[in-house]
Image 1 (cartoon, helix red, strand yellow):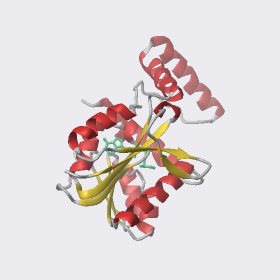
Image 2 (cartoon, rainbow, N blue to C red):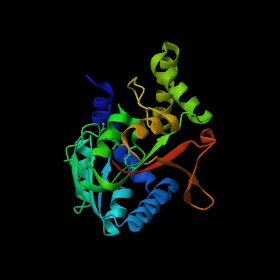
Image 3 (cartoon, rainbow, N blue to C red):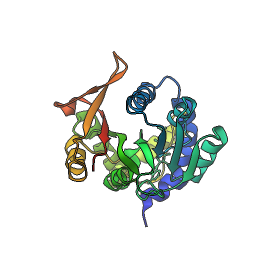
Image 4 (cartoon, protein in one colour):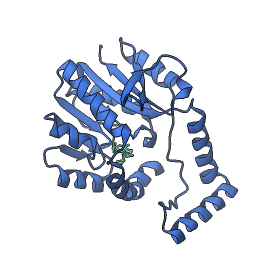
Length: 248
Ligand SMILES: C[S@@+](CC[C@H](N)C(=O)[O-])C[C@H]1O[C@@H](n2cnc3c(N)ncnc32)[C@H](O)[C@@H]1O
């Protein structure tokens, strides 16, 4: 039994339902992701998009649909998909597993996944699947939390401590109680390491095996509000974005 998936479906979805309504506004990651997707689509004349882990569709899928793209999406949570369909009837959303996409080979021009790869049980299966359902010369885009970065490494270490170590578990319980008493934040009672961080080398080594063209990595530059290509010092960046053109 995959406890992480059960957690995503039954617990995390409730948290995300609320959280997604707060974070859609003024979030630079989302603004830049939408701008980047739009530029890539325009440059390469891409129309048919799939968002993997679409959540409620807010804000990325909604914005892309409003810009005139044909947007499909999948998410593991029936509750989030229901909300996505309610909010935007023009998005073709369905329940599904990112690691086993229920679409035929070469269905979409562009397949993307934002703010989500760290929730997945198996990121490489997901990238393989995103690659499979992308047309030749189509594009795959996703982001990761970079565990070469010291801050991200610490978050991962702390999360493991709070979920796997008895003292950490007591600490987490007290933290949850404080959140409840002060009515601040979101208590999370299950002891499960949800976050799954990865790094540039891991992604590059995998995609080099499946694709002729090398994957490009980017970081988000807050000053210019854009994604800038990165080729060294990957550890400086908490989040990395990847773009892969499918050349089989
Ligand atoms: C942090 S939310 C991000 C949602 C959306 N992409 C966004 O940018 O707002 C992560 C999403 O990943 C979904 N998810 C996690 N594991 C999944 C899986 N194996 N298959 C499909 N969706 C999954 C969750 O249900 C949740 O909606």
